[in-house]
Amino acid sequence: KQEVTQIPAALSVPEGENLVLNCSFTDSAIYNLQWFRQDPGKGLTSLLLIQSSQREQTSGRLNASLDKSSGRSTLYIAASQPGDSATYLCAVDGGTSYGKLTFGQGTILTVHP
Amino acid sequence: GAGVSQSPRYKVAKRGQDVALRCDPISGHVSLFWYQQALGQGPEFLTYFQNEAQLDKSGLPSDRFFAERPEGSVSTLKIQRTQQEDSAVYLCASSSRTLHYGYTFGSGTRLTVV
Image 1 (cartoon, rainbow over the protein chains, first blue to last red):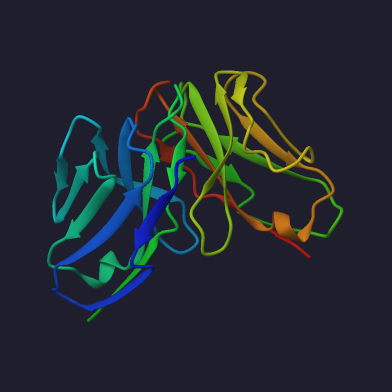
Image 2: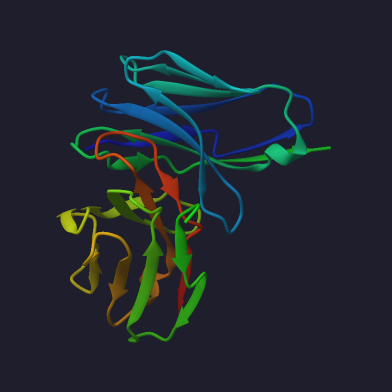
C-alpha cells in the first residue's frame, strides 16, 4: 500500500527566505506526483505536476523535483511571501489505471512579515 | 461551469440524520473523484466515476456511504445515519481525461455531525 509522508509538519519562516518542503513515498511505481496548495476552508489548488519520466517542474518561484527511484520529491519556494502561507500537500498517482491519488498529511507553512 | 462546484459549503447534521452532498464537475469532464479530509489530515480517496460508471468504491468507509452519478455529470455522495466520525471535509475533483492527468478540486463540503 502506498504511503506518503511529508516533512516538516509545520514550518514558520520570515518573509524573503528560501525554503524546502519534503515528500517521500514508499512505492516508486508511480505515474506522476503533484503538489497542491490548500488555504483554510478552501479546496485544493494544483501547483505543479511532475510526470514519472520528468525530474523537475518550475512555475514562477516554485520548483518541484522528483527522484522516483528513491521515492522523494521536494518543493522549493524562493523568496517566500506572506501570501504563500497555506498548507502544502503532496500526492502521488500510481497503482490504478485512472489516477487515484494518495496524499501526504501536508506541511503547514507560515510566512511572517 | 468554470470550476467544480460543491454544495452545501457547510452542513451540520444531528447524529443519525441522513445527508446528501452534491458535486457539479466541470462540463464535459469524464472522471470524477470523491475524497474525505479529516481535520489536520490529507485527503483520502473514497470513490471514482468514469462517466456514469462507478469503477472504484473501495475507499467508502462503510455501507452507510453511497455515491451516484446517474447521467455522467452531477454526482451525489449520500451518508446515511451519520455518526460523529463522519465529520470531515468532503472534496470532489474532476478531470477531462481518464488517465493520470491533473485534477480540478472543488472547495469542499464541511460536514459536522453533532
